Length: 250
Length: 268
Image (cartoon, rainbow over all chains, first blue to last red):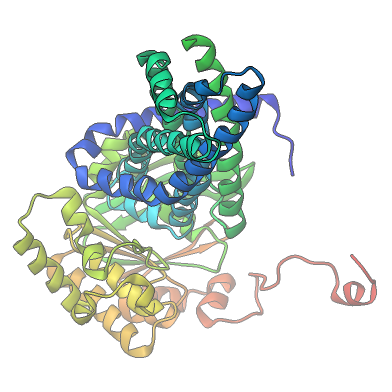
């Protein structure tokens, strides 16, 4: 393990920014070939649905229990719907979805691109005058960016039903109060905050996954390390961006 | 540039971290001929190919292909040049998520708007020429190493390039496939006038195939000429390579301490 000095960290940020520019520059190409894009939305989005829905259900159920216990101390258990909805829409939905996305789809993207690099497939494309950043990386990047807000929305929706399941069905909170308080308190800007966050996380996670794969050391060990870096870097990036966006949007 | 030269290396050097992989290289490759690049492992053959295709830039000198200096081309210019080049990678480098048919069709789909019927005809003709039309529906994982190389060859010629580069095309082929690939390279060269650049260790195959041969040694050129010239070359390093002997000026062993001291001396 070598220590990466501050200059190399800054250099990596620079390379990442340039690479992100090339990815975004590949957007017109991908939009002309929607099939490439849709395939990747399927790979990153549709195939992540099960883990997102299951996690959303359990997180919602935990929120139902914890929220009920907390609110009971203040005698306001009927606010459970509001508490669960705000927590999910603004924070837990986008953040946990992005963390799961990094583990499920991000690692798949990094290892796939890394292996393509190690087996000369990207060099072969270069030699066929096909830019692998446009043809391989950009569709995966845009696929992730498109999938993330929908995954976060599905996570939050299922989470709200999970908290309803525990709070109303198990603990006996009044169903009418649960929904009407939520309707009254949750505003458009709460939903907007979640959408902005999940979009930002989508850009960060997908770009990191593609970047790490494309710059992996082309060996078995190198691809393994790149995959690990994807999860670590994405997770830290998600939490850091979350703080910054929360501070700006609140 | 001499009128017949399609590739020109002028005083080219390439260093990695201060170590010279290639140095002071002057080389011209003639249009429409089969040129072999030979040399022991680690003498910079692959580096030379990567310089020639613009995958890396020389640290000294310049490389000119088809009259264009690779160092002055941007990415688009390089891609435009590469549309006239085909390259066969050592391991084939097929795209593993596409079938054999789709691999061969890949350059056509990326660069042309040809109708599907025409693409199909071209792809099947190219696959037929490497004897693998019947394998069109297979995935790369289902192919043997030799078959993958032949599919990659079909893919390399599907755009009818002017220059074809082969990186070790004969390694690991059985005698039948080798004979077929040999014949194919010859035919492509003679019927279409394709300039062929073949990197290989295989002295006997090169003697049958190549018009010109370049022998690299220690990051520089040891000899240039026809394969027959090289076979007659009196230089001991050239003789050693052409006859395949471990004894001679080119060391077979990587530099090491005395074997007796190493074996009896305990842990390193």
